[in-house]
Length: 84
Image (cartoon, rainbow, N blue to C red; front, side, top):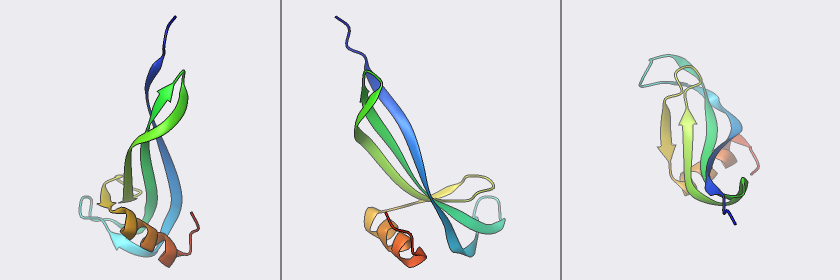
């Protein structure tokens, strides 16, 4: 009997910021994406539970991001009027 397990990355885009921000990496001014990157443990290719969660505000041009903590992420979503 074989047990097939591994990990799978999944990204969820919550929308964009209401204010245009300037990226520290590429110096472009744009509305940043609010995203959550999760790495899931999989069993027989079915995601079971998240192993790692990274919440970011990302530049849509160069995809350079600023990692934010969970409480800050919830505050940003609330300020932007985005329901989780």
